[in-house]
Length: 453
View: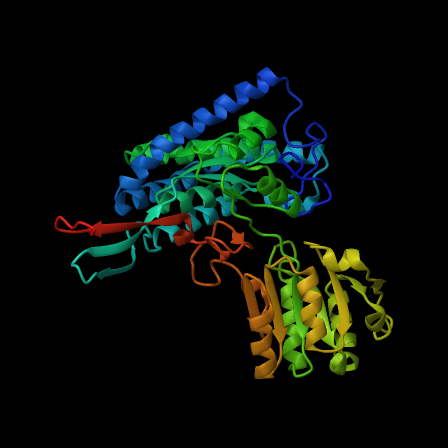
């Protein structure tokens, strides 16, 4: 992600490009920066005009556009895969890790899966025009709170061309135009995909400007996008901690903080230990590079003798590198466990690595989580209803799981059908952001010449 805003130390979609290091903003002359700002603002203006057409289009028209997108992607599979091969060739030459190359890679099967995901979005309820609540007042005035599109959404993400389609599909379904900054690692893939998206829009009579990209303008373009207040309604960063922090701290456009996940599983004294082991393994191993994967397991001291040896042995057998406190290491037997320090408790590994600690009681577990949690997802394994209720009440996170894996904090898993990101903030949206979270509301007041006295 260093091609955008973040440092190479972060690993979620991280990608180090030797030609594109440094602080936010390209080391360009002021005149060049002004030209980039003007170009990005023009893109945003054109997207805003297109957003009006989307807001007034019928749901059937927007669904037709998405079906055209899905069919267009399948028809353009060879073009998309060929463009992706160019990105992969650059990635290998620039030293991208094999795991990140896998995120970047597209083949015919993945293109088909992306198209299928678009068709799934079509099947979701249209949020635009939904009545959140309504009533008739004592004076006869009829009031309704109605969902409306946000307008123009900016997306900042990297090295994942599938997100280009996901973000566009969700924005279009919810009546929003979108301005995309997908990063130079996927620039060939994104250029081809966006062309397909625009062709699909035009084919059903919607403006191509409803989906735009500013990839050509580099990091200076990101800076301009973040400051296009009045032209862009919200910016959603999707990536690692540094990217999200920099976007939030730099932007004058409203932002949604998404994604970083220093997630914990606490194994209580009253846990079913067989079940708890399965939960811990699933939370860490099933897909370790995601923001909802567990990064720390805390074990109540009362069950540490029985549980810690099983946990470390099972995790090590699954290829997990372990970091543990003294009480964990004393119970690890022959399993190698590195000493855990504050850096380990603070780290979102996004890999097959796990910190493990023993805590004296629920109070200590809650205190540890309060200190180190990123507010994403926290889990407890217990058969004690009072302990579970207290955990749910006291943990401050977008998702809380009881006897279940942290991996369930996901739009598809929670029945939203799709998500544009997982918000860890508290205003507007928190947790997986589905279609309704890409809308705002308008109060509609209908009267018969009503006057306020």
